Length: 326
Image (cartoon, rainbow, N blue to C red; front, side, top):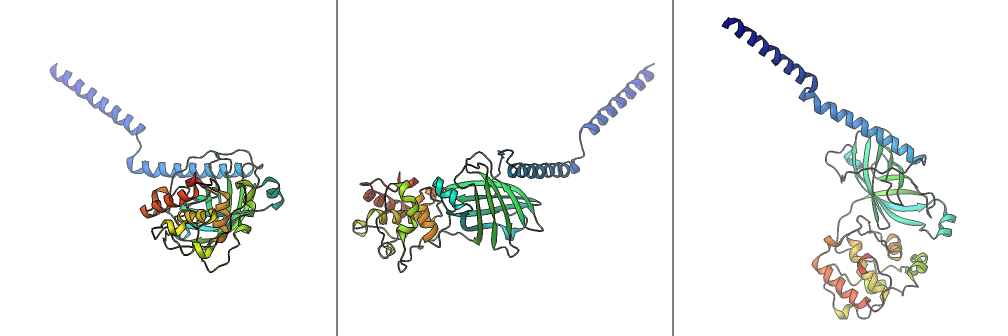
């Protein structure tokens, strides 16, 4: 009797164990295949969503809000040679519309290609004091990309561009989501450039700059004309390499003080919101590359002290101030 009971107990135990193993096998995939399967499915879903959102934006059906991951020159990226800053003029396609709505005919833009993986491209743009991420589809054979900005900013839109096989230029168009903007469409032909902070960069004081011509379109907005600026005077001063004294700047006019101060920000790649300063640095300073909308953490102690000194001389006339001067 005891043997019979023991045998029944063993059979029941074995049966229950098999059921548990069967349940685990049915509900839990093999570990070595789980990662591969999930990555493959996630990549396909992501790519399909990107293509769909790009297509819908181009067709003006919606302004997508997309979650962007920050990727800057990712080491894991495909096509490493294509990553980098592409800089140049961001031009209007319709000049009449710009004139009527007081828009900017041209701004300097920096299109940064940060990450490429399979048929997806990630990056960001910096222009007119605005930095915006983008992502979308990428054709590795033709080097053509269609990418969208998040859609939660009035100036967001779609970039369509082709990278040249020599990996030195980007050419394309940008189409705004909001067709009522002063400039709803722009084109660009950008050159690849490297940015590196150099405290010695300065104005070429042997060049005869036509400052007022460069700033003409901004005068109504900023409230009056700017004083004549002497490049020969400012070019001999550098607020990033030398400690300025009262004697250095006491005879400078308001315009010269403003340019001298903003040269510090320009060396760090600050993208100017102030239209007058933007026009000046975009068109008159060849080495200038907009890379950031906030460079305060990058300023040196010497630069901070010189900024404070220059601003004390600017205080008597609160005009022409950019973000840091307000």
